[in-house]
Image 1 (cartoon, rainbow, N blue to C red):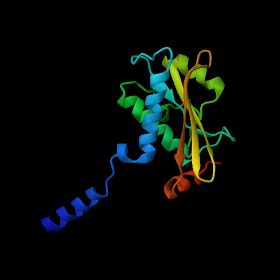
Image 2: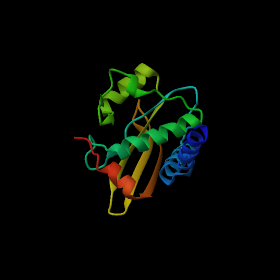
Image 3: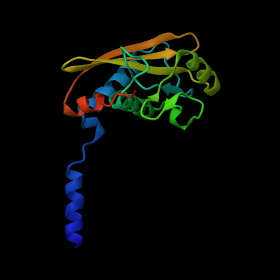
Image 4: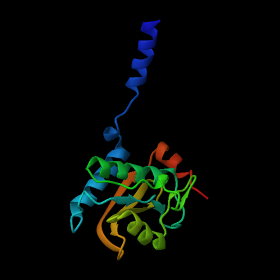
Length: 170
């Protein structure tokens, strides 16, 4: 029995793919690294950041599983780089809706940044073509809406990413 259990466990491990090897996660991490490399002035690591859910560029109050997941991946990379992030899912006073994510409205960003001493907000929007997803990322200083850094990437769409895009929120 132990041998059968161990064989099942090992076969499950064979299907495991480390995030850094997945092309979408790798692209998200690279985009976060580029944002940090280009930010002027440099962001101190001792003041927190917010990451908003990435939205459809044609409908800025709409996102998808893909938009939420890309934002989570970028947030993970900022955390791995030593930056503190405020987790909006734990806040009761933020525009967080089931299936939609953390959609920050302009008027709320300034209030949130003041109440949490946030130095910057990472925002993103995406557009989809037949073969690509184009993602625009920015680091924005909330007090004056100044863009401190920006980066754009294009991701090839596959069956998985198309399915994640089909899950758009209402």
